[in-house]
Amino acid sequence: MITEINDPIEVGAVFRKGSLDPVWFVWRGRKYPVQRVTFRWKGRSGESWLHSFSVFDGTNTFELIYDSKLLHWRLGRVNAE
Amino acid sequence: MIIRKGLQPTLLEKPGDQERIVLHFDLDAFFAQVEEVADPTLRGKPVFVVGHSMTSGVVLTANYEARRYGVKTGMPLREAKKLCSFACLVPADSAKYSDTSEQIFAHLATYSPLVEIFSIDEAFLDITDTYLPWGTPEALALAIKRWVFENFRLTLSIGIAPNKLLAKLASEWKKPDGLFRIRSERISEALESLPVEKFCGIGPRLAIHLHQMGIFTAGELGRFSESILHKRFGIMGSVLKRMGQGIDHSPVLPMDYEPEPKSMGHSYTLTRPTRDRESLFRYLLWLSEKVARRLRRRRYEGRVVHTVIRFSHFETVSKQHDFGFCTDHGGTLFQCAKRIFARIDRPREPIRLLGVSVSDLRPSGREGWLFEEGLRERRLLEALDAINDKYGEFTLRPAFLAFPDDQKIASRALQLFGSGRH
Image (cartoon, rainbow over all chains, first blue to last red; front, side):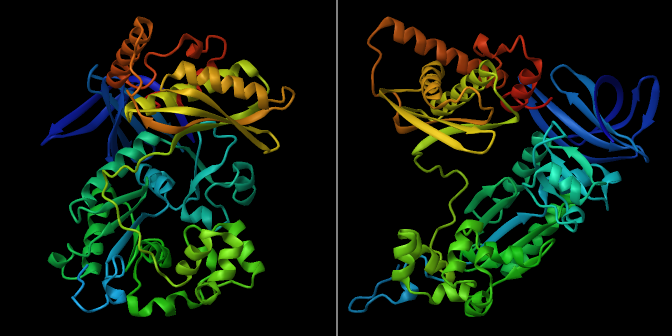
């Protein structure tokens, strides 16, 4: 079931050859490993570019959003079994 | 066109009749496929991509698993759920689809300068003069399919034919993940038993008219008397006859081509029909501002305003008003749209759709600003546009659109007209 969340999260990410890859994130005190980035896209919100990532932890899919102006991450939505 | 002295040009020498190679590119069940790639837990399950309300409205796209149950794009969600109650519902994400589509279309431009974007997930390419490095048109098509899959894990169908009409038909031939070519010498064979409704441009209503005339297949349409078709459908009759013969001279237009607009407008279907006139006026102002922004962006003004209302029982009424002068000002358009609204409104009936458009367009700036007041207003609009260009649509907006008393409408409107759902 897809649930909209929009919580701020802590993210560990790797910047590599012009690409940004989240590798883990902490949400509500629990650390989730990113097994795979399944899709990525970007869009504008005012002056910010939002870089969005669909990530899979092996069980569930999460949407992580990085605001490149404010330099913060949030969890957009979760599809939990 | 080459016309030799003393010779009549042959049919092949007419513009558009020369053997072109047109490719139609169509991403399979695009929105649903993107969601399936983004979320591996959806794979193999029937998926409906729906609006943000998730409870009403229509199915924007259904994946192929859902289509097996008879679910189609545009079907009311309630009806779709009856056919496939266990489908996964995913709210549409326009930023996700448009960014993906833009990246793919930008890549298509590396195969030909003639790429015409037909919709968010469809494009035509004229590869007549550019396919040779790949050897054959089919090899070029396979290279596109491979690139899209390697970069996005998305499949698509490609049709190749001597014109756009047939290329679009060909891409439908072997969906999904298909590649099909209609060669010029096989056109008659391909069209002979093809149902007329398979043509892009022949919808269910037109198909019924054709069936009533005993025309069921493209072959029958191509052989039918042009004068009878003309009598029944006007100039469209000749177009239909040519469709039946597989003839289409329309060129593939380059991506940056923008035809002269005849009118500009926006409409909006409400999540639920409403009688609340104040909410409706807000939507009307929003639509008017949206139209005005579009006019100013393309440097046009218009003098005839049209307002359209669709009542809950689907009756659609519209009226127009000629200002007598040209404008690109949202507030002025709104005042006029509101007056027209009052003329066609039936206060007891809920309304499900509103639309505002402007016609009789001309390039802006013809009527100079003689008075200080007009100049000040113009400068204010320019400043507002500059801010909204920088920070996103409707960052600055009329106070009436702040929706202090209706947060639901506010958030919906912001999704629609704001810079995205983020």
